[in-house]
View (tube, rainbow over the protein chains, first blue to last red):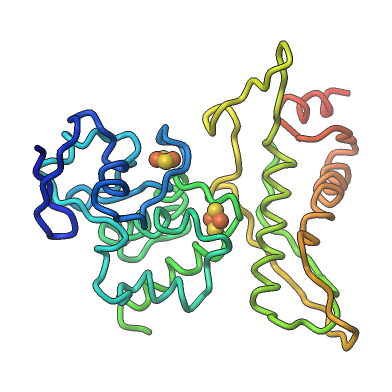
Amino acid sequence: MISLTVNKRSVKVDVEPSTPLLWVLREHLGLTGTKYGCGVAQCGACTVHLDGRPVRSCSTPVSKAAGSEITTIEGLSPDRSHPLQRAWIEIEVPQCGYCQSGQIMSAAALLEKTPNPADEDINRAMSGNICRCGTYPRIRRAIHRAAEMVKGVA
Amino acid sequence: MIRVPEIWIAANVGVPIMPRNLDAQLQSAVIHSLSNLLKERITFKNGAVQQSNFYDYQVIRMSEAPEVHTHIVPSSRNPVGIGDLGGIGVGPAVANAFFSATGRRLRQSPFLPERVLAALKT
Ligand code: FES
Ligand code: FES
């Protein structure tokens, strides 16, 4: 049994320690907001936070996540009120949507560290997240918009 | 390596039923096509595809994604589906921009760095 803290809830799962965290989230805990893209830390679809840090859950063994606060897209806010979620809806960022949980989790970690990011900061923080639909310009705009909301300019 | 910081695109699809979605889909098609044009390449060896994942099949990422300016031509004609219309002009636009900047022609996509270099040496 491995004990985890996921979205502030304590859970126990019966899995091999080497099981990818992504599998545990999706298959054992039913948190299917986090997506499987490449499985090899190249695309970012599976991004979650470990103690606020963005990690690729497809390539993180569950044993490495024990003892950390794990946050998934479902835990970002209880009611879709996180500034990024509001900005994403306002600007209508997604096309197919598959990459967007990962995009938002990477963006959330960026805004935590850099509340007022320049395009350069966005390039650096977001280049690990592929969007096959090419929504990058609207992701960029939505991150700036969310930063404004946080500042209260909204 | 070719970098494209901005792209302009105009589309006439008749009455635009969902203008914001139209705008989004044009942007997406442009960027997807630019990714095809500058980076994406499948090669074969002994009948098998050599690439297997995003580490050896590179696609466009945030740092390379241009701003896309869209213009929807006002029209009262019957609406048509937008599809991937936005992608069609990207190859010629980039190839012609390269020609007007360098006087050299790129004839084969994707325009990978080695092909760009070869064209510049001709
Ligand atoms: S699925 Fe984890 S980075 Fe692609
Ligand atoms: S919205 Fe389709 S992959 Fe990003």
